[in-house]
Length: 254
Ligand SMILES: O=P(O)(O)OC[C@H]1O[C@@H](O)[C@H](O)[C@@H](O)[C@@H]1O
Image (tube, rainbow, N blue to C red; front, side, top):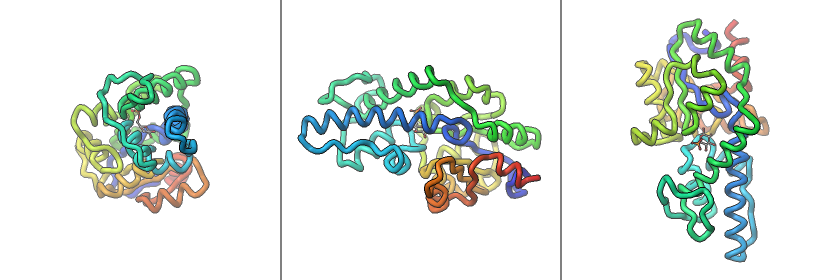
């Protein structure tokens, strides 16, 4: 049914890059944030400024992970370790006082500015797929690391098409480990009341397909909207099938 194995009863969708075009918006906000920080650091240390790579660094260290894990994991790749700070650290901290939380808040302010000025686009194939899944009686949850998930689902009117939401806010409140750990998807299956083996994960991030593989789900659909070998990387990290859009599965399911 819908291009999926017959025993499947539930669908667990990542948000950014799977349902909406916001993966690219997050990427741009991260690049702007990290580049300001790295430039200030280079000026202080005299080392060469090496900018954040919006393809490789984003895919490897940031994409799909909770906000502060993205900050920590990218900076660790440059051997930079900052104090965690506290959630309300200001977005405009001076360089010497920068914390993980402060950098995350800076990125979030940039992200919200971009969303306010450019809006959010829904992938029409995904909206059609969600509607077809509802008509077929399949259970549907969004499982995203983003603390902005509720707002994005509301402005795009996707909220009506999903039954449950596990997001960055849920993870913080319940102390659930983020992707690439499988825990957020397992929580999605749990709140829907289904066995993970009967649930399918839809993901565009390497950390997300890895979480799908680690959780023993019925299938892991990798969504490759980037090209340039991303589909192969999704397979290597755990996708059992790769599509370029969810509409591809509707075609296969005919
Ligand atoms: O900063 P937010 O909105 O809580 O999002 C956290 C992460 O959410 C993920 O969905 C994105 O792929 C990441 O790029 C993002 O960093």
